[in-house]
Length: 261
Image 1 (cartoon, helix red, strand yellow):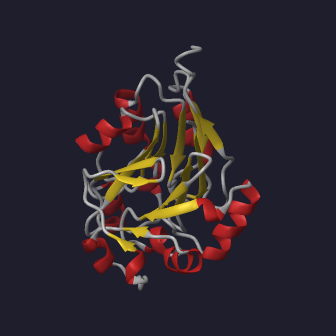
Image 2: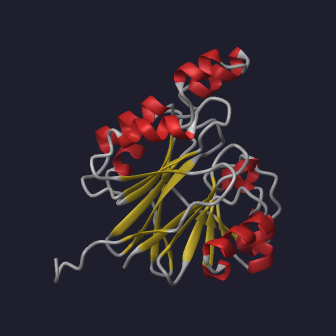
């Protein structure tokens, strides 16, 4: 069964990623308003009532901003760790709060969502892979350092959203204060273009079809720059850069039928 993927928005102004199988879908994070989420889903031709769960990576508002209203309006359960929920300012219907634990997959219809820990400056940050049948996609953003969990799960993916937050030179020359530059570059900050490229070239699976470069900094990166870096090293993987301002296309990732391959 194929997976359908799209970024509704990606950046410090809001993050929301759609992964579905044509029957049900999940959002990884819900960091833009409910109204804007609805508009973008309509433009992509995707039914919002097909979204059966929201999975929250961490409590920062660019990942949670729309979750309350979406959950309340559409009756969507929100999967979030107990620690992350307590650290957030969300006030969800208690019946809609679904705690998860790293390493224990969550079944959403025919989708299997696998949570695992990552390194970021939040209370209990996680990333996720989503599988339907033999096809797996992952969301790997807001990562200070590519730990063994991230490397392992990227190696399982047929498609991935991967953070390429900043260019080292642009960050150093830029106007950010020194403390913020060091936070971004730290082990619990964000991945640079070079770090993301090393993760991609070293740990990608041989069957990775699609890479959506995500969470680009508005100040310290540029889509053309990161697209060029990764395209030169794509080795057959389709390279897309997610926007901070609009949704991407909807991408279909599927494997050939083993009986007809």
